[in-house]
Image (cartoon, rainbow, N blue to C red; front, top):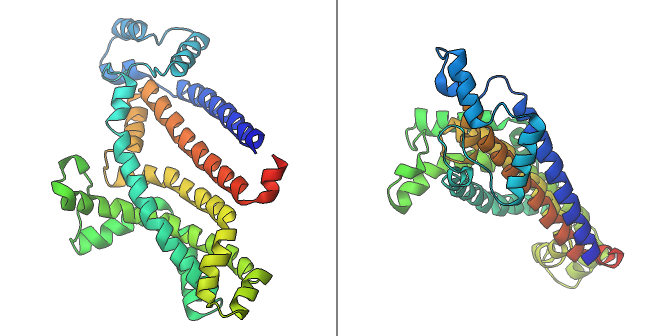
Length: 315
């Protein structure tokens, strides 16, 4: 098992290096640069050349890549081209906000998804199951940006219940924080609940037909108790894998949510850095998102290994 986990770790590090190389190459190929963005259209060629030399933008691509990768290995993401501050400091002001948004969305999405999935699996083809399936498919087929826009339209424009902009830095107290976080969390959760509930239902329907579950029911255990105490623990590996795949939607969905709600998170910072061609900040944000994706997959793999005796023996 240790060797199997070590292989996953090595594969994750290799993937992260490949993504880092790809991000550096793609960001370097973007038209324009930070010098032109800072000086504007009226800058002279001499001024642009001087600022580019000062920022190191005239260095050969291979040399810039070597300096950048070497700095990352030492925990140094460099300096922001937009304001000269350390990239780690710039990201440190935004990362907690994004983690808070993702954490609250996860706390909402996982219990609701499990409850809907279990309830649907207990009564397949019932009215509740069909309604849940329809709503899940609807949520799955609706893009994240449209879900976010509709929540703004319903809860802010039409009803005025919640603010359309989620400036958490200006929220007053715990209640104010929850109020400005409500719409982003709702938008992100809806994009995850549909997929996770569908996967949980499919996994549990197969588990409920297993002999050990049927035996527990024949001995007097209620179907719901048998599903929660017998079927669900044995399906922990597949359910965690399905949950990890569903939660990865947060990484892509948060892009639209933070922009639409003007939420001061890491994704909004990345979008702004693309506009200003602040390559060090943009590259660091992309690596953090990739690392988050890989961590989710790694955790899901480890849980699957621990929950499956055959995988443990294979390691």
